[in-house]
Length: 282
Image (cartoon, rainbow, N blue to C red):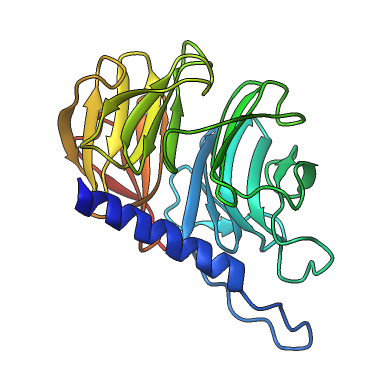
């Protein structure tokens, strides 16, 4: 448990440090070549397209394509990312280096055109959501700047502040009840049945990234890439397979699982995490 938490925490802190200290862009200098998929922070699926939120903007890989292309012109650092529905995305992070007029933390931002353009929604300059999950108009965000869990019932326009049981690596929403969530934290896995007001420990020997695509399937990938599945909302876990590397982001869309690895590779499983194939290459 200690080793897994240290690995996850090290990745979490190193990512934060890079975003905070990135130098401003020199507009007179020649533009560098596209960096490709580096420092993946989030994943999402809309239709048959896989979206990849990174340190240098949003990317998309249509079905059948293993190379992603950039979405829109922005190179903002998208730390938290969630697809609400269709072309409506929400995110958080840090501005494009050319946007010197913006504060370093974007709060909650949203796109209504599939990530081509973004606008501010709330908490500009006040929050940096490293974890961001949504279910309809219910939104959960873990603010890395203050270690607080923020919960919104109106799509992120207004927020209630809750105290998480520990710093949160990942959070998954019960697909049948948006007030019921499971959080993977520095101290293990916890659940709340009232949108984060109270927490109950589930396991103190697990850490990782979680996804909850159906009532009978809650998944966790630990820092070494081992995939576990729970059929009873996190009380018991069974091994399912392995991604073959440390995960940087993890989502589930229906029967399909997607995991981004530390090197920018995105893998996909269609059999509940037992076997994985490369979906996108860096």
